Image (cartoon, rainbow, N blue to C red; front, side, top):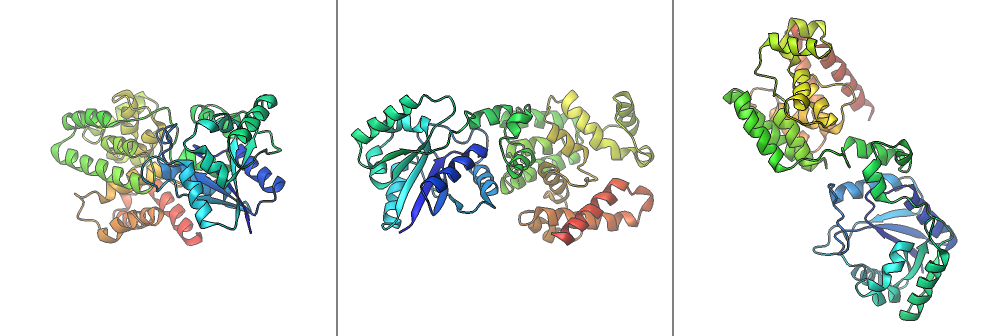
Length: 397
């Protein structure tokens, strides 16, 4: 007979205190394993909060990847409709009739436990373990435990671990403004949040896409506008595949060529006036500046202030070493949108875009460098640096 802990929550995002509670329960109650049960759609809160369920699952997997005896249970994510805990623990009871199940929760959940749907089923099938939070009055928790014991079968016990008072909502609200808050998530989760642009103060809707669509119709030549729509839609599709905020990627796609149809003289003038550095190759071939000028325009002209969008626009032609996820999405979308038909091995590259994004970036760079080598005067050193970076990355991974 195994002793199994089940730690339920939205984990939006998972942070160090969640891990500490799970490990404390493992040790104190001699559990064989603790599963992080990632909530689907519970009746009492909105789990999405601007990010996908898959993002939350990914972050939990990253956080517990190398920690012994911690695992993940994703059943509630894939369950249709509202996800009630009594359903899950009924399933555990049927799946593991010989095992002892422990339900790990915070003290805030215990206080409201009697108001849950069918709490008597949960307490019948699982022993409830409660983690106090810093600042909690122990008499209130002990009263809630006593009350639950009188109301329901089963047992309710304390975990000898005082969790800090940090809530996931504080991380969502202050992640980009507080290093102290940032330190409450592990390095892998921290990098994931940044790379996927989660909890950004800038969010976008279809109305933003419609507004930019009207602007691009006026700003671009018809053929360039058609290309832009193709890139925006491809960016949306790639973002869904790689769990990036899809409308944010679509906005970046709408604006990626917003400075394409202005004169070379104007591009140089905008850069010089706004202290945007110009390389020798860009002075020689000013059309290469449309990315940098577009990044400036997206803030100054189109009121899109997300730094990831600006950066993706700036590097969408040349790429750059160690691109973030949106950089890669826009770089690839620009190359493979449906209107493209002259690049070599497009069918292979298009398929690779949805199976291995880094390999796709490398293949595009390889073909681009081969083309540029036949026109050496046009070679931007950034493209070469980017190619060498991804060539080394692919060889080493």
